Image 1 (spheres, one colour):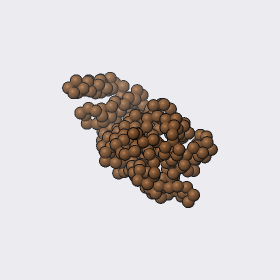
Image 2 (cartoon, rainbow, N blue to C red; image 1 turned 90 degrees about the horizontal axis):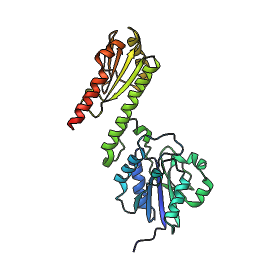
Image 3 (cartoon, rainbow, N blue to C red; image 1 turned 180 degrees about the vertical axis):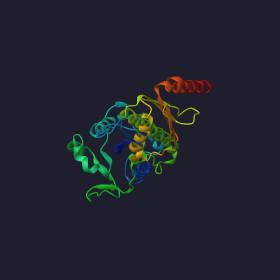
Image 4 (spheres, rainbow, N blue to C red; image 1 turned 180 degrees about the horizontal axis):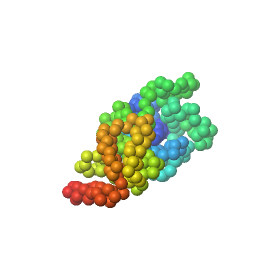
Length: 295
């Protein structure tokens, strides 16, 4: 006979990406809380944020890889499938309707959420429906009157998204690194293109070569307006990219065509005449199609 679900723990979050502190929280809940079921619920998007980095379905997948085979654990797609920001109170009410015999809901939140907790939608109603359990951090004080899970790992998802991948669980590490490295590279190429556009370069184009056999992952091409415009753009790139620690690995410059090597990004600054003559865009598109045909 299937056991009646009367006590559950809800652990929600962006999981963008899931990291070792999340993993520690999950295992501490299962080890120390007297519950029938742990619900892990990734958001579509955090109601207090404007955007996400990894798409919701991918974050859901990572959560399933890490935790769906643990005992008394369910990965719930309720918020992801809604396709919009969902307040915690809505998710709690969903669980109460899904498990009509429920008597206790523990809501697991990070200590960093405490400062804004009273801003949550229908907070007064929410606190009557759940018992909060706080996952502690070294840098956040938690009242002794609140129930705690002692984690004390100050791991930042936002820092991971910038390329600090030390705290990713091994089961998903390679896929997480591949995704965020690709996203970081796109953001770098877009930043370069934006600087060029702001400094009057014309017809700025980004070509993605990341899945092709080529010397760079991305190619940025822009048309210069005059003989010395290319030199000016190079100096502007050096100034504007300095805070981002971009490394200029090589620069070849002339009045008609300048090439900047950022390693995995190559930038071509070309006069209109040279751009039409050499038509790099057409060459790269043909190369992509030829290589795709061989796959």
